Amino acid sequence: MIDFRYHIVSLISVFLALAVGIALGAGPLKETIGDTLTGQVEALRAEKDSLRSEVDVATGQLKNSESYIEAAAPQLLAGALTDRRVAVIALGEVTENEVGAVETQLAAAGAEVSGVVTLTSTWTDPGLRSFRQALVSTLVGYLSPAPEGDEGADVELADALVQALTGADPAAPDQFSEPASVLLDLLSTDEKPLVTGADSVTAPADAIVLLAPQTSSDDKGSTSDDEAAQVRASLLALVSAAQDGSEGAVLADGEDGTDALWRAVLADDELADSITTVSGTDQISGQVTVPLALNARIGGTNGHYGFGEGETVVPTRVELAPVDRTPQPSAGLGGDASDGTAG
Image 1 (cartoon, rainbow, N blue to C red):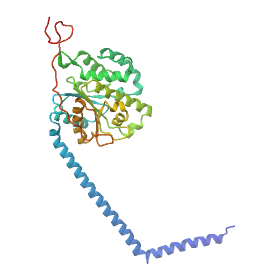
Image 2: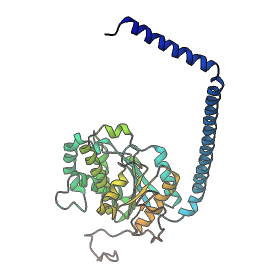
Image 3: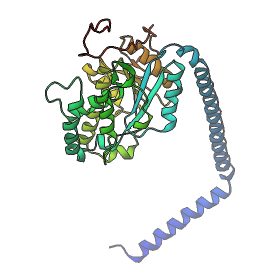
Image 4: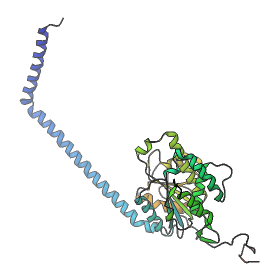
């Protein structure tokens, strides 16, 4: 059994060890320990200063590269989209700066932005599926061409928005057809509008740019995997409809994470073969790439542009045919439709 003397001996041993440590630290080892610590601090300080210098150099080089691209953009883009009207669809909340940056490069390419609309949460909210289905039953009557069979609410809504933005009156190509105007009105004026920004739409578009929003980690964590998959499928249906219903479409995405919409396109062989994507549009290089990618897509070349795996850095520019907005005679007015003369 451990008695009191054992505890006394243990305590004495502890105090002796402490006393020896203090004596050595304050005496023979004082200089050695101090010099070692001082040397380590100085080494860490020098390493920090070196890293800061490297960061400053890299930051300066990046700014120089961005300045060069920005200055060269007008020459790179001039004439790439001459007289094309381009509608911009924000697939969620996108900042004015992000939209404005893309608009600037489209204008440098000779395009006119015919309108900027933004999808609201009503477009993808899983709890409003019944509402969207009810609205679709009204929209389909104005679709031309109408969907073949029951394509589902996501596809029919996508067709409705694309036709609302591109539907020109054949007899007056600078104006919207009546069905297109009705579609845009139905999509934007309900108590739960599916899109905002309808007032910015001024003319029928020839092509479409779709801007994917930046998604925070908080947003990603607020939905289940099944709901996230439904949202992604709905957005991809719109991207596909934009390509099928216009001269050409580009999905522009600043995200670089595994959940980025452009990665979902590349992961699906069928989508990858038909939809053009641009990643890194939060940077000037990606913003300049958007008009070039749209130029290539209108010219019949599909591609995926950026600095990631499976992407091409720069699109190959195509010489596009001039835009033809010749009015076409309305059917059923009599005469030869080929020359517009009355009989």
